Length: 102
Ligand SMILES: [Zn+2]
View 1 (cartoon, protein in one colour):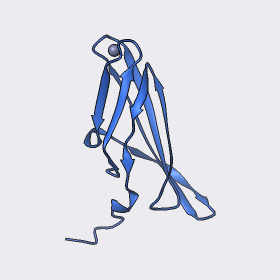
View 2 (cartoon, rainbow, N blue to C red):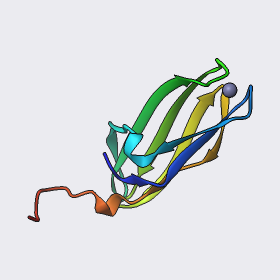
View 3 (tube, rainbow, N blue to C red):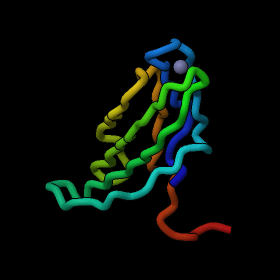
């Protein structure tokens, strides 16, 4: 899944150091969808954890919802051990549904 760009930044609650994730480090997986009035709603999530240099363990569960298809609907990050400082930007239209070029 490469519909994200930009940087996801979190700030450690213990030492205040910021950790940045580039969009190519993100590993979003489809969490399936549901049918709604304007068509399918698709969900993507990326769960990860890491240890800050201070030893604090930071865990997050980053959820993005696409609805209607091709449009960003909402995002939500559940995080422990840190505070979110910056989020990715999304472009669902860039994601080819089929290999219809090259
Ligand atoms: Zn820290």
